[in-house]
Image 1 (spheres, one colour):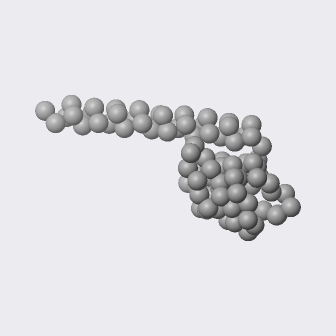
Image 2 (image 1 turned 90 degrees about the horizontal axis):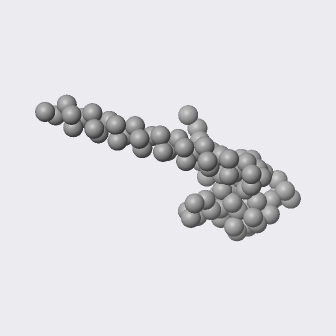
Length: 90
């Protein structure tokens, strides 16, 4: 499975830039998108270090809500697995 993460461009020096998401900053490649369509403040989907699609803020927020829910559910499954392992240690 491949996961693209929404990030906001905070520095632009085409063909690269700096993007941020949830307080984490990363240098990203921008060469897969046209230089004339990118501005500081834009949101993009980043996959393996490259911006692959420009999206609007609403879409970025919706994707993060979904990713946060998946992570929350995965954390709950880990808690359940740890409880199961402790119960079986008896």
